[in-house]
Length: 166
Image (cartoon, rainbow, N blue to C red; front, side, top):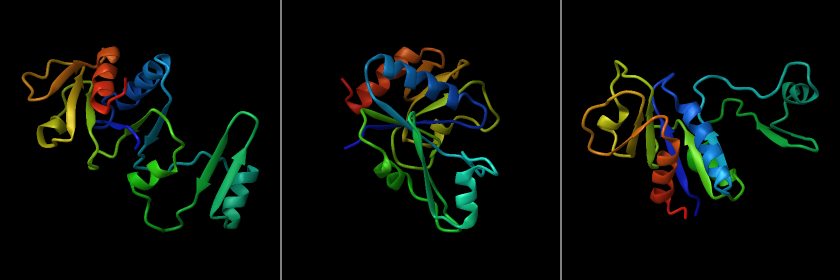
């Protein structure tokens, strides 16, 4: 069973920075960490004209690029339904913790990043899967854990306790 914890929040509220800092914190503690990030726009790790791009443009369903330092698998959906978070998690190699950025509507536990007060309000106000709020402002009373957005050690401690990561 994988330990999975999410980081959610509205656009430009510090999600990516928090995930980056949490990865560094858990890695420094000796844990292996993987991440999954949801993108609302078309994402491409390839560049037009490169050999792998040419393979995909020719119609390949999957292109795996490998070097001495990393490998990447690109899978073209070509109109098919995008995979669920569970399907993506199943593709990852075993690790101590998977941090998921986005996927706010999925049922896994999450911490909300809120750099500043936004007109949308906190996601946590209407979502019980958000177990904590990491805010850059005074949120007022909350019915769940609340952290300063910059207190990454405390946020990491909370997540570790939530997922049973010793």
